[in-house]
Length: 520
Ligand code: MLC
Ligand code: AMP
Image (spheres, rainbow, N blue to C red):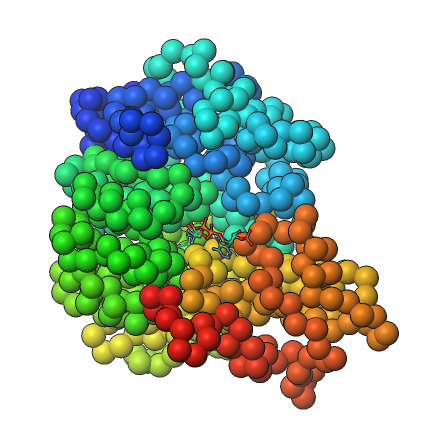
């Protein structure tokens, strides 16, 4: 029934005929209800029908800003089944941020939380969205009603590997978010490679505590499990103590480094507690070698670190068998090429040199939505994508990321582009200019701080800046500290020296000397 749909036919293959097999345990819900594969896909089919009834045609975007739930996952699968392009949005985005995505992507359908409908309905109408539906964390809403009215059974829309399956927005160095266009082939090929590389099978039970609006939780965790016919323990949010309990029944976990740092703070994290676990995978942000070491000492497991991006899905991974080298992101995945180039000339550098990381393979996206120039700047004619990360490949072939050529902060696995925040701060009355930087943070890896120069004679306070950003920026992007200064350090070319600022304020979020470090 799904044969003509490139991605869904693959995601369904392992569970065909296994209708009663468990796909998920809904952790935290009363009685921990289980969802079978049969129920998962019946729900996806109902969603597909409801979307088509709401006007969806193949190729149309379905923008979604809803809390994590099984119904939201079925909406993802239903969208693909109906030939739509899934466009998930971070639940932390403010209406001002959502407005940009709706204007830019022109979705046919927008699904939001019923509690936010009042504020978002008008925005959706102004953006000419065809139909706005709701889906709450409790499963209620107009989409849920439309879905419940449908019977299962749906002839999948024909989609080939080059058709779009999703658009995921990723912030840009200019402050304007870019929609990364991911095809059926991108997602299917990456999931297949990861399933093999990490040895996922139907016997696996994955702890799924990541959000489902990003590549990591939506595609890596979910698609790999589906492809293997395994199951997940589905948690609405990260909770270290609850996850320790989950490890009694699980075999695998995927998380951002903050997960590991927080778990290390739990006295219950021991060899015994993790004895049934097969693999711990980390990515989305650098895992400190120290965290890797502490984890191995406490649990006997070497965390398997991998490297990916919204635009490329996963590129490299430490080996399942063989040494998982702390501080490296392992080898290029089968089918993916990684080269290190001279940032200025683009020439490939000799092994061991540090340069720009470029990747090519079936995982690499099709380009940025309606941004041909941006696409040309970052995606070469020969298929190599310039990641914006700086790195090297050692004599054994392990890739290390040593820095970024893009001005980017990664906080708790979320990407934050300083430019977006600086533009808002610079617009505030009384502000002359600002520089937003990432500083070492014991929990989030990097924490956002803003350094602000006031207009002569103005006496702004730190809290004035924070209050002014409240309604415009998602909470995780808001500076956790604001410093008011007389001037910003500049080099002879007039460029603001962010390195100097990072050095000056580097202790800001660090625990006081003598206090116990947060696990890392
Ligand atoms: C929450 N806060 C954050 C934050 N998360 N601030 C900065 N960075 C973050 N990541 C804020 C909250 O708004 C709150 O602010 C305060 O910090 C404490 O919140 P919390 O309750 O402790 O946060 P929590 O809900 O526990 O979330 C932390 C987290 C979450 C790490 C679990 O951020 C998370 O799930 N991150 C994963 C992101 C992810 O999936 N990335 C993958 C991207 S894909 P206040 O002031 O109100 O108290 C990708 C490609 C790849 O990168 O390679 O995978
Ligand atoms: P995103 O655009 O949100 O998908 O974030 C992608 C970026 O996250 C990459 O370009 C890297 O800078 C970073 N990243 C992902 N995985 C790792 C990792 N294992 N180590 C260091 N950085 C990583």
